[in-house]
Every structure is written in structure tokens, then in C-alpha cells.
Figure: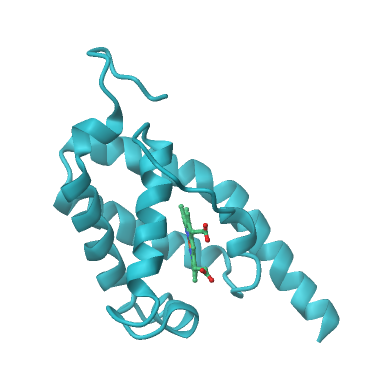
Length: 140
Ligand code: HEM
């Protein structure tokens, strides 16, 4: 899984502490954002309390799993995005904030790798999000 030339993983190059700091830093900006903030506050609650420690622990498990680290993540990212009313613009903004947070917390090679991974994930997550949105439209 995502082995580098030296045989270590992307996760080991980032480290648990930095991954955690990255995620808290990223979501601190997400909740302040005029487009994304309302969606997250409604679903997860007021930052950094309510459901946030659980949400971030789940996200940490997710990123540990996809970067080759030890992880017990067993979630389903697709369905988690299907009833949020998220549009392409939400994903554009999410990725822009992710890029900024990555540059603040990680070295360029790791930042670039996590940006590319999220850009690829966007394709399927956005498909789930838009399908959910049209479903809502049909039933309401
Ligand atoms: C490529 C971009 C994105 C990635 C990689 C991503 C990743 C994830 C992951 C891994 C989870 C946890 C799923 C689970 O196991 O429960 C999650 C949850 C969530 N995401 Fe995203 N996400 C992205 C974009 C977005 C956008 C654009 C929005 C909203 C506008 C959003 C809103 C949420 C919310 C509200 C949850 C929590 C759902 C719940 O627990 O009820 N995400 N995301």
C-alpha cells in the first residue's frame, strides 16, 4: 500500500501527530467557510465539541487506511455524502481548503500526494452527492 522507494508508507512519512493536526486545522477552516460551514454544523454540530471528536477520529482512521497506516476504519464514504445537498461547488471549496491546510501542515511531497488522492476521491463522492440530491428532489 503506497510504499515509497525506501519501503516506508506515506502514513509513516506524515506521522500520526501531523495527520491529526492537519485534520483539526482543516475542519477549523471548513466550519468557518460560508458554503461548507452550514452543512457541517448541521450534521456534526458546533465545532470543536458535539460530534467533532468522533468525526475527526473517523477521518483519521480513513486517512490512515488510505495512506498505508494501521487503521480500524470500516466506514462507507460514498453513502455518507448522499444526503447533504452538496453540489460541485462544495467539492471545489473543500479541495481548495484541503490544499491550503496541506501546505500549512505537511512537506510538499506528502501534501501533493494527499491532494491528488482527494481529487480522485472527489469523482465518486460527488457522484453519490449529486445522486442523493436528485433523489431528494424527486421525493419532495
Ligand atoms: C474529496 C472530498 C471529500 C473527501 C475525501 C471526504 C471524506 C469523508 C470521509 C472519509 C467521511 C467519513 C465517512 C464515514 O465513514 O462515515 C466524510 C464524512 C462527511 N463528509 Fe466528506 N469528504 C469530502 C467532501 C465533502 C464535502 C464537499 C462535504 C459537504 C459539503 C462533505 C461533508 C461531510 C459530512 C457532513 C460528513 C459526516 C457525515 C456523517 O457522519 O453524518 N464532505 N467525508
